[in-house]
Image (cartoon, rainbow, N blue to C red; front, side, top):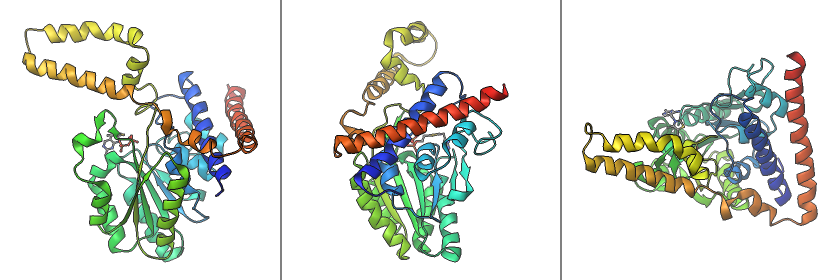
Length: 340
Ligand SMILES: Cc1ncc(C[n+]2csc(CCOP(=O)(O)OP(=O)(O)O)c2C)c(N)n1
């Protein structure tokens, strides 16, 4: 893994450009079903992964693309998976949410919170088979209300498992603001279970890298689990085609089909009281306002890191990544078309 400023930029840009290519294929209808990307979270993923070595493991959530790309999975095989092809990474059966790369000790699950138990499993195996290796679990802040994740942090603390729990906090669980469903402070919660906890601005990859270094060193030395709470913004909402964002970005086109039914429901003589209906419309308006704020602005980890580099450094990385991603897309598409 690359550890200098340009190396961190390269890790993030590789993932950003790859996911942008995935988004294009999805928009063109070549990739079907939901697509959860990590655009905006790259600083957290790169800052942690840059410290991993051979034999370390990753337990991933429904946004597993970025970690796999940064860890070096074959891009063509990953794209072939997303295209549902039998020669994809998981024979076209996993899609983007259930990805496995045994050679990288990486496994993902769409079950929110499931990366916790999986990371504990990897870490327990490390203790017996691969001392000095660690396991990383990535998850969103919504997973912090899942019992299995809390049980995992507790077990990791009691057994001194070499796990780094990484919470990527964008403040939203699909359309539910975290504040409405999550009590207390997440770092204190993890500390209460016995983990070493750190909070960091996830849009600053170097800050993440520096905190992650401590957490991973502790785990390698047998000092038990850590919890990294890293904040971020995600411009694409929950998934590609997020309905709230569609309305915010194209209000005239998108609201045409929705205003009629909303007005009809509001005026109906049956159903909830006027007050409840007004409250529901108010909560829809609040969701739209929140969706309107889902842009990276000054929080783009890729741009923040680019500004720390010289233009010569940036150009080398950008040219390499552009060529690599374009070649992967060409190869993945060509082999589908050749078989058609
Ligand atoms: C156990 C479980 N409950 C509910 C869901 C449906 N679901 C999929 S993603 C998601 C939101 C997760 O939010 P968060 O953990 O904050 O991650 P983010 O999507 O923001 O990255 C939910 C509720 C699920 N997949 N698994």
